[in-house]
Image 1 (cartoon, rainbow, N blue to C red):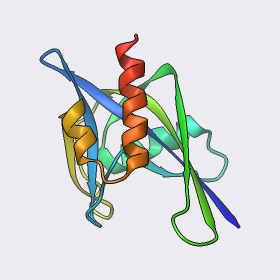
Image 2 (image 1 turned 135 degrees about the vertical axis):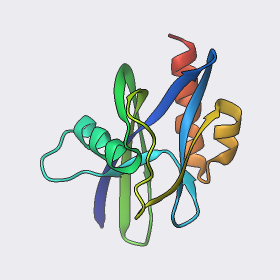
Image 3 (image 1 turned 60 degrees about the vertical axis):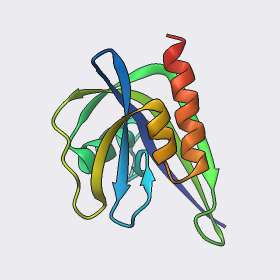
Length: 135
């Protein structure tokens, strides 16, 4: 069994008093939250920060108290763990990494949830929304 690990974040920004979440449409056509593979000796947050910057051009501020892990099998004999943090857009302008990202959207919760391709991403978004509403 091959085990992989990725890290990313549920990224949001406030727009006219409404929280909007970052959703990526990949060049392969699915929509997801921002995440990517751990490299070398990176910490989980270092991986998430690097992947967010590479895929979107954005810098983020992580919020303490939110860390969700999902696991799935992308192919037979592989297990992938993905660690998600909650993060607020802090700086930069959205720019798609052309090899992986076709479009970047900021959508309100209900539309973001509907846009996500995978149920596991919707579950993470649900938990982030609940966490952020409780702050």
